[in-house]
Length: 558
Image (cartoon, rainbow, N blue to C red; front, side):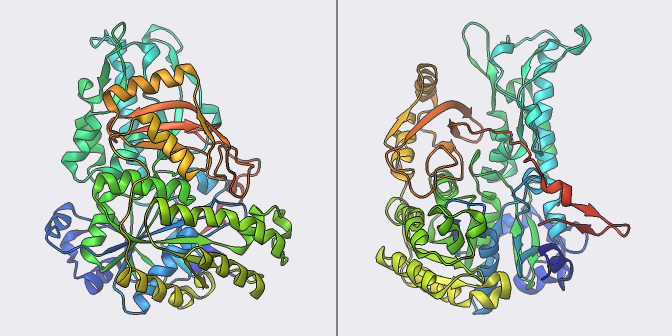
């Protein structure tokens, strides 16, 4: 059996300039090629599409992730290929992968099997340099903060109240807490600092929510980097005159990236915030561009529907005015058995009792999508060879009992042909019974009420708590930023804040341990439980298996 990267490297790719012209009539003058198979789309061309009617937006999300794997990106790609196969002009919009999980435990994010976007190794490693530009823009502001203090601190910044960390696109737990400027007066004033992973950067969030270069620059200027001594007034990036140079570093990165699937269908891959520690959606620019080009657009939101889908609705759709028509919820029999208590090495054995127990996780996500997000849902059963007829029938019947539809999809093995039934089902829902989304909370609710709404309605929590210091900080933020949505930073592995709790726990406690202001992005980050915005590598990182041969061929990526 070929590995994902072997399949990708054997793909019959078409020149991206020819593909763009053939499929969407995009002239070469509107493309900035990065080699033969990837290109950026010009902002002028995007602006020329503004009077086009919008296509129909479909969100792909998933159950709570497990070590068994679910295949959300794989399903997005396979469904997109299948929609095109049945005559539905469709574009997919994906996030760019971070180097952190590529070298860590999760692997890449370009799909898998015969449902991938290519060139796979380019997309997973460096791509068009967007993440490097985001990291550089973020760290430029970091450098300018300390430089300002070193040269007199005209703005009276309190070094103890600087809220702007540094970032690197790698899992490196040793950088979570550091001390900088050691070595004498020539190196500045020593202070505590730390690193987040680039995908958790507010610059990443701004990048993905900005609607134009001008909007990007204004949002960058709105970043709060710290507070003054005494009065504790916020100091913004624009006060340091940093936002212009930051925008200059991002002027090319903001242009969406065009690639293709294994079946030579165009795809947009742009932006990449994590959904457990950030808002988990690809760029608004890419999504809106796709809607102007295609009749159907399939996008994904990271991790499970309690995280990525909630933020897609409450942050991205709210800010960008997007109106999704339906949701595809990805599940596997293996993952449901894992949620039912089966060990990973026993997931290939039929176990109806464990499946019955674990299906509560899918049912909770399905209920949230239908009741709290207000959208029709099709469950895509990502097929594995060891799935039995009895197991599939049990899953289908449970979904149908909740008013949903479940379809077995074999895109991993068969590409778009293996997802044609899923494509017809999704198209039927979108064309004949599209939904009208609803928010989990309203704009005028307080920040604490918004946090409680997500925790109680979506997570099934019985209590939501925070110590007196955190509650005071939330109350203070509420006075000036109370209309902001909240971005919950929580483990992706469970509805609770404990990653070891499987299934669909109810009545558990969610403790908010920290809140952060993302003024440029326009939301408040609420961190629940032991959630780190700088992940660490596992005991045996994926990096140990990645290699390159004498001809430059990369191996070991997955």
